[in-house]
Length: 277
Ligand SMILES: C[S@@+](CC[C@H](N)C(=O)[O-])C[C@H]1O[C@@H](n2cnc3c(N)ncnc32)[C@H](O)[C@@H]1O
Image (cartoon, rainbow, N blue to C red):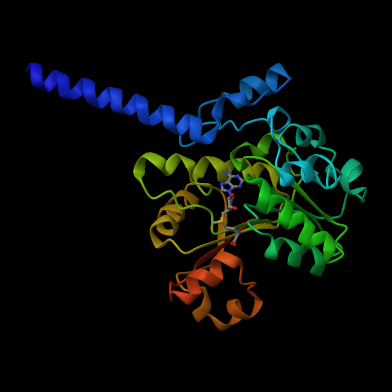
């Protein structure tokens, strides 16, 4: 009996320790929102995902070259997690200075920004906002897009689970999610980007007739995501377990950096396109 109790205690302690390490890894408790409403909102606990916190760029004591670029050279095109909060509902008017009818697309987790730059440059009549947690790929992405001539691209250091704090309902158009971390351990499922709670939030932010494009190398995550998608109002327009075996999709597909790595290993790419009707 005593042993059983001890085992339970050790397990509890272990859980506390693991949660604590996760918190520090995610640099959770620093999200210094000024507005009370937003603060409460940021602490809201939801069924599948918890509001994550990230550290504050302005509080970093020894900023590296990428942080300096974010706060100086690229400050008008790249926003920190604090500066980006000011644009809610005003992206077209204040940031891009375009008419209300110009579409704004999002790319979540831009990585080193090859798709980000490509999309911005091949769609000059649309605007694009990228989101990335890490400073280096964030700057690589915006630099790549601007060096190629794009005037319609912006990027923010921001956790995508909190995107609904940055946009009003019906403010955005298409969303690209390419090779997000699959978070394969059940305890980590809450970190997965494509899940029911996240999709419901995006549904509210997107205009009608917009899509979400989701690609992943992880079959396990993909099948799990499909069950989550079925709980939402999105309609599945196209779906395949092997994007590169479908000529029509392959012809239109842009191969991202991570996709190239998986293709070299002969890993099939799972692909789905969701429509908000
Ligand atoms: C596996 S990489 C894929 C990069 C790129 N989309 C590609 O296909 O080559 C995932 C990227 O998403 C970023 N990321 C992961 N979680 C994120 C989050 N919650 N919010 C914003 N970016 C995130 C990572 O820093 C990383 O650069």
